[in-house]
Image 1: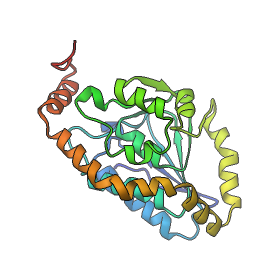
Image 2: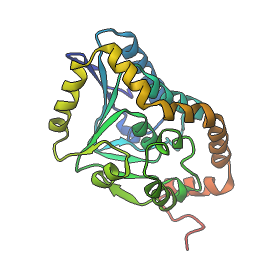
Image 3: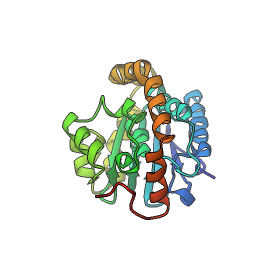
Image 4: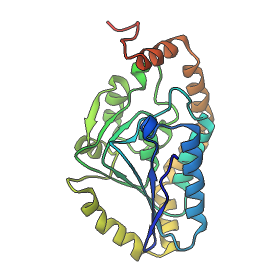
Amino acid sequence: MTLAPPIHDRGVTTLTLDSPANRNALSTPLVAGLSEALAACAADDTVRAVVLTHTGNTFCAGADLKAPADPHAFVALMRQIITLPKPVVARVTGHVRAGGLGLLGACDISVAGPGSSFALTESRLGLAPAVISLPLLPRLDPRAAARYYLTGERFDATEAARAGLVTLAAEDVDKALVPVLDGLRRASPQGLAASKELVTATVRETFDQYAEDLIARSAALFASDEAREGMTAFLERRDPAWLL
């Protein structure tokens, strides 16, 4: 199982990533399962908004290096979140790495707790945050993007909020979500859909313009000798050959 059964509460459906064996990594089953669940929410008139959360101490560990999802499928999933006519709210109480930041960045609103941490680790594996740049670069502070893209440093929820990756850092995530979800329940379906179109316009244009190029870049990087060394070193828990 990659997703727990959905929970419905007064117009809000909670989808929970539940693949503990690989820390909710972006495998083909997880991407397909989440896409199917989101489509069901879009078609259900009783759903006003979606909360995306996780079990365990990891929201999403990024690409499943042993069996990564097809980049076209992952890009389609991020686009699906952005174009869904209902808001998607991320509830994060754990770690988010690499491709997981793309999933998080596609969400409309996000609240992260003190137990969460974030890192764009691709550069340390001989890769780059290619396809996840589609939702991230239009929203991130440019200086923060440059620093964390290049260094792979880990940062906390407060810095994630400052950089524009998440909406809010909170000591009590569920308490912080109460006014957010109340506001979404008070909004009309048409009002939500039309308002979301406005705030996602730039991100949608970025997908339309750059998606295919970034998919190609990602595929080329994954196929390179340097990336193979980086991913092998990571899986074998050793330093890569290029470490100084």
